[in-house]
Amino acid sequence: MGNSRERQPSYGVVDLSTRTTHLVPYATAEALSTTAFLLDQQLRCPNTQLTISWDNASHHQAAAVREYLAEVKAGKTEEEWSIRWRGFALHDPSPNPLEDIGHQAQTFVRQPWAKLTSFLDVTTAFKQFLAGQVFDFPKLHRYCPDVQVS
Image 1 (cartoon, one colour):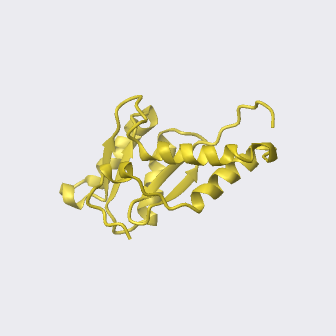
Image 2 (tube, helix red, strand yellow):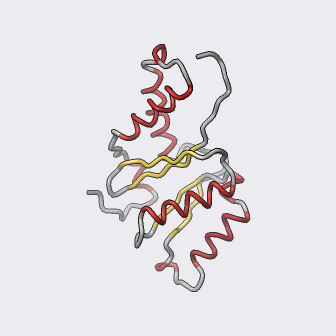
Image 3 (cartoon, one colour):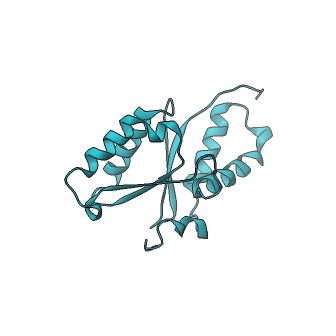
């Protein structure tokens, strides 16, 4: 496949009630993509209170994202917010369960590496791994311990 620098920024979410993932690719990781992802999650899960736990990347903290979250919360009590945001420590991926899931997917992709001849092959294998997995490990429940697992 060569040593190209192709990238596919994606936003991911773990549904703690089903322990499955949802991955959404974007052209870039920036404020517009971040707000689009938040809206996508609200549309996917109407009438559900979402807890978003992200690191403190600049596109997660951008003014446009803060404005979007302020709109979502406007005139509501904290219990009524459709999105709650919790941040991870800056430059510390260790508490983020999506990092662990990503590492599992990367390990899966490395196994048939010789057969993956293009970037599309790699991203397809990565997505296939995530689509077929149910994840359950303690770190998933650390930030939302009250979620009932089905």
